[in-house]
Image (cartoon, rainbow, N blue to C red):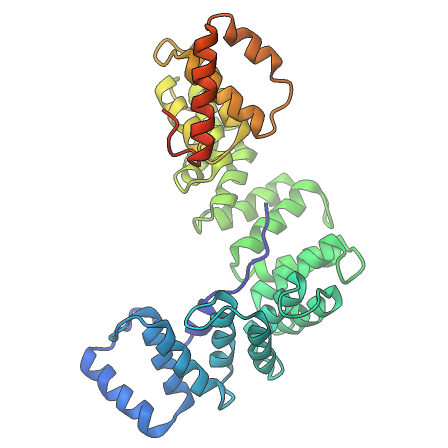
Length: 360
């Protein structure tokens, strides 16, 4: 599933410090003196970054905001953008979407692509401004035309969904490809999905795998899961490999699929213990399918047989939208007393109320 991403603090970090550069405390102290004496906007901004990220000074969001504001009021666009983000997230200042929009707009009108993207996001979600898809497209396009990968991806999504522009899969592919070719993982996933479904391009599983793999190799769990799905039923060891990578990052669908591979012995040796482990990880995230299968493991497996646990997980699966559970309950309740059923129902209630933290 693709999500629209609000750009985070990384928008401001680019170019501020070279990779691996860690100034010493003395150098930072001298820099701070220079900041206060010179009123240099970039220096003020960098001091704000230091306070935000606890580099040589104590972490302090209010101080970060103070220095961002000084730089922003001089028209320094990275500072304006990050000050807007502080208002968006309520860090160092009371949360205020209108103030966020104000500062994003100042930077956006100077042509700063990250701010244009954030301003588009605010219009898309109706935060601090009325929701307006045409404004969304306007600002995403401005940033996208500068080669900004996040904006290109978001603009592609607007074309795919026909929001603010006529629906156009070819244009969606065009913008996804521009971002994907820059190595942007979300765009690579979107482009892979277009190839998988034959939207805007001829259907092509090899191309889908190619783009999923590029994102998966960056550690993107959604891409790892999708890549595993492409191998599932054809190259089961590869499927298991990629499901595991996503599952270990907490991706519920991958955890469920990995549990299924262990239960059936597909791509891995059959192992009920591992099946229960992975089903449970997904079940504890509210995945109804995993809850159903976990219930059956507790009912069927000699290693884990526990009718109360089975009933509890069936009950939770029903709560989470699994239809036609009558057969499951009919089977399990044949071997349970009315007291057993009441206790299992209470377990289900406690498990749900604890947000799956107390389910034993």
